[in-house]
Image (tube, rainbow, N blue to C red; front, side):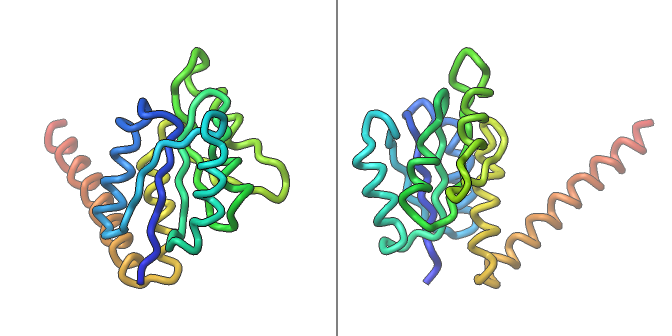
Length: 163
């Protein structure tokens, strides 16, 4: 049975960005759960979710948070599953504060970090992680990459005919 992916967000204001990740995961046929959890306002719930995630069938956890952006780190500290952090652009520093909080994890508690508001790449990284042991997912990733290549080549051909 294929592992699930959890998408955790620090605030409901993160949902518009995360819908792209959720849709991408569903496009690959990955069962996805999304929850709002805060490292600061609901720490007990975040810790319990992280601690139980593996036994609940999850293979990867994606965490999106802005400003202090501690959600990915708190989750990573309480699970051995891969955690992918998405720093969100939600403050006066245009997400740089969240980026630095997410990427600067202490030795021993890694969090894979994507770009500010990088939900699409977070979803694709989760798919890649699950595809290590899932040939069907690996084939779908190859197909997606081939489609991206073809799109660029078609755009180049169009440009060449216009020039």
